[in-house]
Length: 317
Ligand SMILES: Nc1ncnc2c1ncn2[C@@H]1O[C@H](COP(=O)(O)OP(=O)(O)OP(=O)(O)O)[C@@H](O)[C@H]1O
Ligand SMILES: [Mg+2]
Image (cartoon, rainbow, N blue to C red):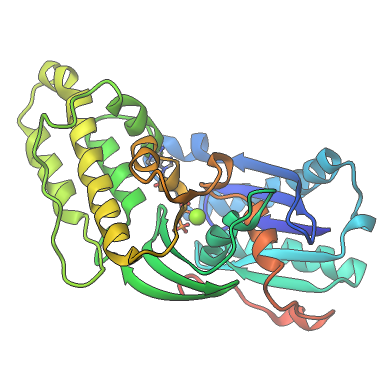
C-alpha cells in the first residue's frame, strides 16, 4: 500500500491507496474554521496546525484502513506547489516515516495529484484526455497524453477560478472559503439577472480579474437590505459567468477528445451539469486530499532510501 500525505495549503490529509488504485482510507482535516476569521489562509498559522495534525491524521488513516505501518510499501508526499512552510511539514513527516521503515519515498507534484484523482476506483479514467484543472490557486487546460505526462495548453493570466469564487463570495458577504457557499446560494438566484462579462483573451488562456471588478461595481452602491435582496441573483449571475468561461475553453480545446475536470472548482454543481460528457473527479476528491497524491505516486518514480532526505519543497512550479 501507498501512504499519501498532503499539506500544501490548509488541509492536513493522509490516505492509503493500493497499487491498483483502490482507496483503503482517506482522511482530510480542514483548517478552514481556523482561517475563516482572517478571510483567507494565514501561512504561518497553517504550518503550525499541520505540525499538530499530521501525526494524528496519519494514525487515523491507518486505523480507517485497518492497517499498520507494516502494510505500507511506499510513502508519497506533496512536494509543491503550495505554501512553503506547510509543504515542509508534510515532507518532513513523510521523510521521517519512510526513513524509519527504510521505505522509498515518492515526491508528488500537487497539480499532477489533482489529475490523478481521476485514476482511482473502479471507474478510473485512462489517458489520453483533455483536462481542465480549476482550483484555488490554478486554472489550466492540460493535454494529458499519458500518466504523469501533460502539456499546458492554457492557464489563467490573473486570478484562478477558485480564487474568483472565493473573492466573489467575500464581496457578497458569504463565509470563507466561499466557493461552496456561493454555489449553494446561486441555486436560489436568477443567473440572467446580471450580465457579467466573460473576458476574451487570446489562445486558450483565462482571465477572471475583470469579472471580480464587475461584481464589485454591482455591489458597492447597494445598501445592506438591497444586497440581501439581490444576493442570490448576484451569486447566480457571477457563477454563470465563471462557468461559461470554463466551459467555452473546454469545448474549444476538446476537438473531439475526451474531457475531464479536476480541482476544487470541479465540485461546482453548475459546472458539473454544464459538462455532462466530461469525466468529473468524484466530489470527495475535488478539493485537496491525500488519496490523489498516493494515486499520482503510482505513476511517478520513487526515490530510494535514504536519498530522499535531501529533497526540498517548492512553492511554485
Ligand atoms: N462547489 C464549489 N463551487 C465553486 N468553487 C468551489 C466549490 N467547492 C470548492 N470550491 C473552490 O475550490 C477551491 C479549493 O480547491 P483546491 O483545494 O483544489 O485548491 P487549492 O489546493 O487551494 O489550490 P491548488 O490546488 O491550485 O494549489 C477554493 O477556491 C474553493 O472555493
Ligand atoms: Mg489543490
